[in-house]
Picture 1 (cartoon, rainbow, N blue to C red):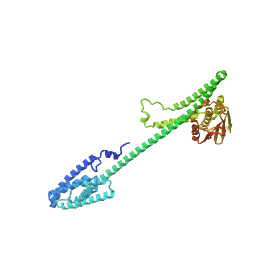
Picture 2: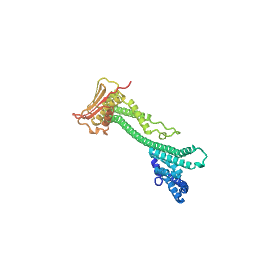
Picture 3: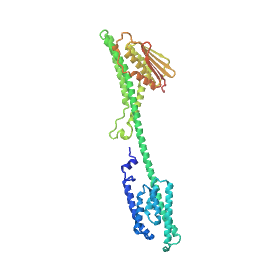
Picture 4: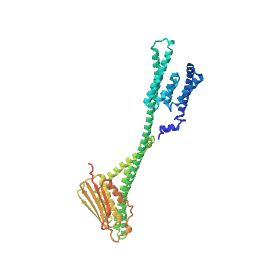
Length: 441
């Protein structure tokens, strides 16, 4: 972050109340010049008043030196200049003191009151001095008031106006600096939040891809393992059936590879184009890579949903399980209507995962698949009975426990209801109801 004005002042701090060393040098130099001026004027004042010269010089040095306090106590400096105005000393003290007072944070009513007092004091002093010297002047009676007003305004007005301008400009610059610092902090917070959102989007996309990979691979590989076991059992007894099972295994493998290629093809089609050699990378151009990656991931997700399976392929899915030796009964209630692509794919995946779980955990069990088209929703259920007695436990396939989690995430993401659990007969049931948003024509 950019260093704020306060930090810059502290980095270049000066002695005592000065924020910078050059400010201290400037004030001390002005105080020296003012002291010399007041000392010279103190000599004339001592001669007019019949005082010792050294006393007039001492008074002048003390009065002029008060200018060094103009930043810390500008009101005191102006009061001193007003107090010594009858002695006709402190010209520089008056000008610099009024300027410092107007440029400071002193309330404007106090500044106006002291400026008026200084103006009135200068007017009176000049008027009296001009009247005293009137015998040596050859001008008319108008000259005395004209000179008194002109000199008092010339001594007071420019100093006050310049101080007001500098003070307003300083406050404006400080306000702009604070606003810039605040804006920079807000931009940093926005960047952090954008990074958090992008990280969340990447995590969601990784979860979605993992879920799709699980649905594709687990079902196909489970069928391949079942057919491979059957192939091993009948290889010597029934060569024709072994050849048929081998062909089914090959078909399952090719289907799995095809689905994986389609999925990876969708992801690759949304990769950012290669950066030309003469252009800056995306980080330098100011475009957040996280946002680009999240947008590409969302586009890939939409494309994958549009190209995914649908309810019309449920018959073929059930036939594959039957070909693997599973006793599956499929029933469809209601009239089929077109649903949104996400609804159709989610319903298909629920049935697919339910059949996969039967292959893994209850090989040989009778299974019933129900699909119901209802007004405004679609319901599906996969229920299997207990495994037959004497079933080989080694035939059971390993499971990572992610299938049910993935189905629940899919269904709840669409506002549906998902229920899974064992039945009273010792089997297992998977049920889901999804709101049926119809696809746009």
